[in-house]
Each structure stands twice: as C-alpha cells, then as structure tokens.
Length: 446
Ligand SMILES: Cc1ncc(COP(=O)(O)O)c(C=O)c1O
Image (cartoon, rainbow, N blue to C red; front, side, top):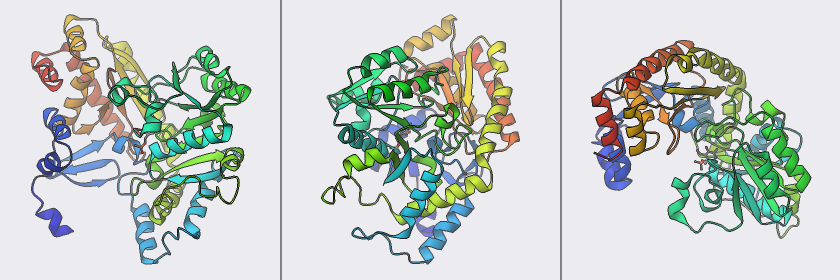
C-alpha cells in the first residue's frame, strides 16, 4: 500500500478520469485542489507539508478527531482477534454490545436498534418501518430539511436543488416550513401521516428551531398518532454540545437516526433507534423476523469503531468540550454582527456554527443576482487559500458559511479562525474587483 500511494501520480486527474470530472473542476476553480497526505485530530497536511485547520470535519463525521488513535487501536485489536465476522444466520457479540451502548444513552422510549451503513439508509428504515407500523402512508418533512440522497430520504428532502431533476419522487410526501407549528398541525390533523421527520438543527443553513417548536411538534405527533422522528445524523454524538441534540428540548422521539461520527469516521455505519411499539409492529412474527436489514450493516469493524468512539467521547469529555468551545466561538464571532453591515447573523449550538451574510450595496446585489449565496464563497475561498482553514458554504442559494469541526480542536484554533474570519469578511465586504471577478468565474458566469 505504501508503494502504491508513493507512486500514484496526480489524485485529481485520476478522480476526474474515473470518478467525477465535474467535482474536480469545482475544486480546481475554487482553488481547493491540494494533494492531501495526512490527517490528525483537527488538522490536514498537503503534499508540500502545509498544515490546514479542518473546520469541516468531513461534513461532521470526525467528532473525536481525524485518525483518532484509540478508535484505530480498537480496530486493530479487533482484527487481530479474528472475531467471527457476520454470521448471517446467527448472532455475534459486537452488534448487541453497540446497540446496548446506544440505547443506554437515549430516552427509555427507545428500546430497539437497527443498524445501517449510512445516514440515508437509517432514514429509509425510519420511513419504511414507520409506515408499516402505523399502517399509514404519508410522510411530512420540513423545507430545507436534509435526510440523505437515496430515493425515500430524498422524497423528504426540502431542497429543490437535490430533488428537481429526479422526479417523480415517492408519493405521499409533503413539507412544511421549519418552525411553523400551524402548518404542521394542518398536515397531521387528517391522521394519515405515518412519520414527521425533522432535524433538531437543520444542517443546510444551520437553522436553529424557534423556541417551543420541537416540543410543540412532538406534542402534535402524539395527538394525531404520527411517529416523531428526529434525524440526528449530523447533530448526534455531541455536535450540538449534548450527546443528542433532542436533549436540549427534553424530547422523547419515537424514532432517532444516527450515522456520520458513530464510527469516528473510520467505517460506514448508521442506526435507527426506535420504540419497541414500532419494532414489534413490523417484526411481528417469525416469518417477519428479517423484514428489513442490509448485509453489511452490523459489520464488526463498524461496531468496534462505534463502541470505541463512544468510549473516547466520554473518556475525554468531548461532549462538554463541544459545548464549551461552541460558546467560546459565539463569543469570538458574534461581535461581527454589530461591526460589519454585511454580517446578518452569527449562530450556533455546540460546534455546529454558521455566519450568514446580507448586503445592500450594488456589488453585493450583482453577485447575488448572478448566484444566490455567492458572497459566502468570497469568504470560504480566502479562508482556505490564505489562512489554510477549511470551511464550507452551507447549502445552495444561501449566503451562509458553516463549520462542523472535530471537537479536539484547541482554543487557539478557534481564535485563529475568528481572527481570520474577521479579516476575510472585512475585505470581502469592500468587494475588491479581483475577488468579485473570481466569484463570478467560480459561479461559471464569466
Ligand atoms: C441530517 C442528515 N441526515 C442524513 C444525512 C445522510 O447521511 P449519509 O450521507 O450518511 O447518507 C445527512 C448527510 O449529510 C445529514 O446531514
């Protein structure tokens, strides 16, 4: 493997040839086309030995840090133990141990765990099992919600840029504005909705729920017999400063989906945690004992990584760290709202943080006309190329930059980010011609 990697040639060329040329174009255009050699904790190194601060964490899957040494050691140990692997017709120790560990950390209402290999599959399971358990067919989700890109989860997606070209999606899916309880009541009152699926904090745009919204949504679900499903794929395992985001509002969902950082970023894995009633309504007899599943879902390496990740999170008190660093980050960055006209909002919960822009000047309006949210690229690109900090625009059509860093980053890292951000936004607000030209090129407009 070492030799293969040493003599491999250009990664981006090969990616463009074999995987996705358009993605390679995007990376080249915005100057993100580095050759990556190594990672550790909250840092990445390129082939020239430059260190980058990774505030994106692989879209939030490295909560315990990239290449976490204790998760790795557990994986190596498990490989050396020659554990039985997947029996298919039989059970082994590790899936039960991880299921137990997950259910011990969630409200008593959740009693069963079904493993998957990704977040979207966990949501597929929630929708499919939820429909069978309630004997209802409709699903309600929220505008701007994101639950994955397979067909069922995509049908619940509230972002047209992901759905428009893939119609028709599944029938019976409707959406309501995030935060609007009257609209939700309007959909649920017909008592034919199986599942209401919602992120506690929306990843696209980092939208926090208005006060009382999630508690109200749960109450409406209970009133109308709809299953309340909280998608914790991004927010789970400490991202928002509690083990699960729903804890902030004392919720007790019927269905909870997790994935991303469950394996510490090492092995694909996800899970649907559900109430016993839902489970028993679907897996209701021996002939139905295998009504849903996936060959690789409870694979042992994923289970080992999950157990080690939970251990690491608690041993190093990383959830508390996420809460503390999140507060610190808000302290450091909130003053930008008062200082700079172009900063509309700075918000966050734990280490899920975003800055939103809104401008009124001619240049800003021209950029926004060219492509909504383009101003945010004027921040993300120099943060990367000049300050070596990796961030991301938080969705199509939104002028929002977001970060989802590994929790192991330091106070100094946050201070470095806050300083770099302030300098970058100040400069972007002046809209120097070179930046504007770059942005229009990046958007494919010039
Ligand atoms: C809230 C949420 N749900 C589901 C998913 C889909 O997860 P996966 O990419 O593992 O399929 C994502 C991915 O970003 C997500 O953020």
